[in-house]
Each structure stands twice: as C-alpha cells, then as structure tokens.
Amino acid sequence: MKAKVKWLGEELFLGTSESGHTLVLDADAGNLAPSPLEGVLISLGGCSSVDVVSILQKSRQDISGCTVEISGTRVDSVPKLFSAIHLHFIVSGNGIKEKHVERAVALSADKYCSVALMLHDNVEITHDFSVLDK
Image (cartoon, rainbow, N blue to C red):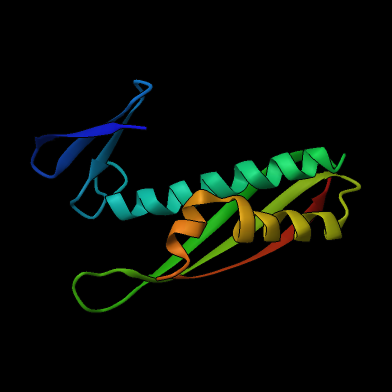
C-alpha cells in the first residue's frame, strides 16, 4: 500500500491514495479541511465501523444504521499526542440484540481494527454503544 501527500500552499495538503482517491488536510487547526489528527480519529472510526457493521450482518442482525462518535484527548505538551480516544457506537435497526453489538464492538477493538491495534500501545482506547430500535 502506498500514498503520497503534496503541499498545496499555506497549511493545506493533498493526500492521494494508491487507488487514486484524494483527501485534503489542513494543518491550520482544521479550518478548511480536517487536520491530520482529525484524520486519525476519522480513520479509527471508519475502520471500527466497517468491522462492527460486518460482524452484525454476519450475526444476522437487522441493522439499518451505524454511527460512531469519536472523542480524543490530547496531552498538553508538544507533540500534542492523543492520550485517550473514546468511541461511542450508535447502532439502529429492528430487534438488534445488545449482546451482538457488544461482541461486535469488542471484536473490532481487540482483534480486527488495524487502526485501533496500531494505536493501542500508546493511546487508551475505550468504547461503548447504544442501540436504537427502528
């Protein structure tokens, strides 16, 4: 897997994936686009959500929606690394069993999500969930 990042001027950068997709990043506190660290949170949420949805579908849960709200806490010193990240999954559907959501979230965090596994030695990652019956 490869990618490249090109400086566009000011504090804007254009990331291009090997597959040709692009993402603009703004190092100026995310004023015009996500900052690189916001990109880390989005990547973690995306990676985890893919797992959770897939596991729930394989568990034959009638899932109609999955949103994850991610909050990160950073240290006060430079570099301002994440010290903790919390993921709150909101899963909706018909008759979703909480035990299946709990299992899916735990499997993603502990076994499948590459982004979480890369971060877990240096960042405390926690998660919880709620289920909305629709």
